[in-house]
Amino acid sequence: MLKHFFPSRFLFLFLFSIPAVNAQDYSAQVQEMYVAYYSRPGDPAGVDFWVSKLAQSSGNLTAIIDQFGNSTEYNDRFLGQSDSELINNIYLNLFGRDTDSGGMEFYLDRLQSGAMTLVTIALNISDGVVDGTDDAVIVNNKLVLAAAYTAEVAAQEAEYGGEQIAAAVELVASVNSSQSSLDSALDSLAELVAPAADNQIDFDANPNLSGQFRDAVLVNRNPDCRAYATDTNEGDYNSSQITDISSGISESVSLVEIQMVIASNWNASIYDYENVQTTTDVSLATHCRMVSNMVPNHTFGVEVTGPNGDGWINAIDHSDTEITYIPVNPVKTNTPTDTPRNPPIYDFDGILLNGVGIAMDSGFCYQPGVVSGPLSLRSNAAGNASGCGPQNTWFELPAYTIWDQNAENMAAVFDDYFGHGFVATYHYHALTHPLQEDNDQTHPPSNGQPSPVIGFAADGFPIYGHWLENENGELVKAESGYETYSENSRTPIPTALHGTPPTPWDIANNPEGFDSDFGLDMGRYEQDWFFSGTGNLDQCNGTYDRDGNYGYYITDKYPFAPPCVFGARDPSFGKISPSLP
Image 1 (cartoon, rainbow, N blue to C red):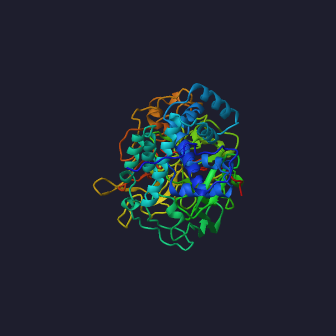
Image 2 (cartoon, one colour):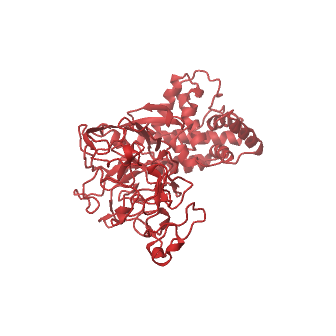
Image 3 (spheres, rainbow, N blue to C red):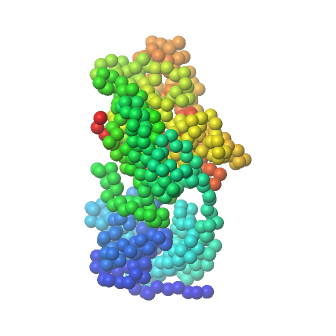
């Protein structure tokens, strides 16, 4: 059996004073960054990328340290942990033990004061290892394994995504100061690292649209956003000759460009990442960046409402720009995350490949008796009004008429695609058939395949149409697992600002007990629904497809599209409203 060793002097040179070293030494530095910060070996392309970055900066780690430490992967795995937990993770990654009290106090103070970041802490902990100690041997063994693992992935041209990363983390954690633990881990590499060809799936590509995406019908089911940046359309999903009913324009242009990028350091004040670099290398991309003007690829909009357009349906700003970063290699967790309800900022549940966002949260709520003030904020005949935010309850489902087409006195008004313009931004509240055949709600795709990818959720997992293939190989319609409560009356919510909306039963049996006189069927409000587990989807409207890929689906019953996500939500899925045109 081959034995491996590194020199006893620890591989990291001091962070703030690094002499010129060769590329092999840079590779060792990068591997230690991966092990200390991400608890795994670096992927071949990632190691090469950071080695080149170090070479460009003559080995100065400070030039790359923030970009290395700010990633979707880190947010997926560690977002929400306390500062002390994050510091303890570094000790666990490197030494397989918890932080000692002195070290925790020292680094916690520097992290919370802003004197150091987590990455600089990781490197300083590494630098502080004393030669000849168990800690030095443990880290040395982990780095030997990491280098061998990366080399094996490169030799096999193996995949190194979510599942493989999880297995690599476990393997690195299994190594301690004993030679036997290292030998065992090295012996398992050939079996653990499988050639990528064994796992590849062929997907039908979307047609070459030659820059005209108008009324396109998609077919590609590839769950990886990079497939749409590198297909025959080369990320050009533009459209022209689009009719905008809201603005009275018949020659609208929809601008959509999809590129692969390496992005880090989200800056909420500018709604963008500070460090963004385009790349043509699929193995380096952290995100797919979609830049659009949020004008769809189909006829859209409804006539504006109110005098001079002062109602809540407004004309669309065609000069608007939306920049959305779709995470590459999303990781599914067991904990759902709801979309924030934070007006006047749009917080999108997803973005379609035509560049238009999905905004599932309702801005309409039960608020009877508002008869003055701006027209857009007054109550309608059902007692509902717009302009509602986190302080409100009893949110009316804007897309309720997809489920109950006979519903009366709806506050929201939509076009045929369940989209409209509000504060100049066109968006969907539910999805009927964009990017699919017109009869998608009632008939599966005519090509005999499950529904295509039509967009991506905020965690990077794909959004499909209405149809999936079950375990028997049959095409079936995606069915929501939500049901309405069966009581005659709604249970009052103590924090509700405007009371409880009545049902038809209430109006017939206890009309004097309510502030409005129109009965609304159970199901009209978000709070009328609960997840029962019926149907074939989870609580975020997602499931695994026949190829083992997780994604979200459209349904014609609440929640209609994903109301939450099981991965880490990228902050770019939101925007401040543009100015009215």
